[in-house]
Length: 171
Image (tube, rainbow, N blue to C red; front, side, top):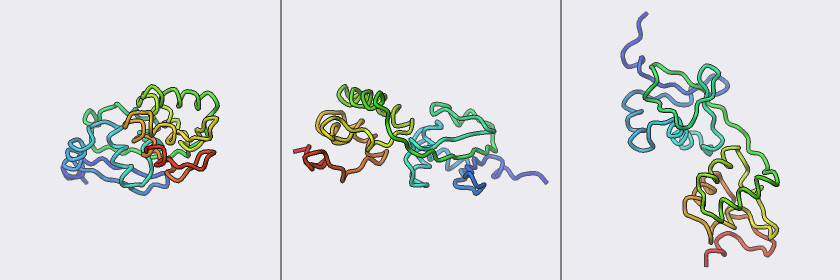
């Protein structure tokens, strides 16, 4: 039985148990491209909204191969089936904590994002004052760094050793 043209151009994303978690036809992919871009990273942003999981924890595989964030999905042949794997966060090592605070101090959002893709638990990154990465970043770093930490679900309710929350550092 031949597939219809509509089903031939579908991008299907399967969960680990085999259920379809997203299915995008050509029109939906074009809309995704307009809103997020046309890369694997853009697909992760869309899946973040649909799955409620930060994009930093999302891995996409095709035929067992990990897809890179900068790969264009428009270069693919369709139909295309990919699998989504949600990776648990982990605590940062001492070296990663140092790298994160350096990235925050220098407003290096690319480095912050790279560390969050490990995927690090953003609340496991604390300095000697008990400040989480978000508390440290809010008054001194770029909006892009703060946005990435919030997107990774850094806790707004976390406190430092003085019991101050992130909002208190903004005044």
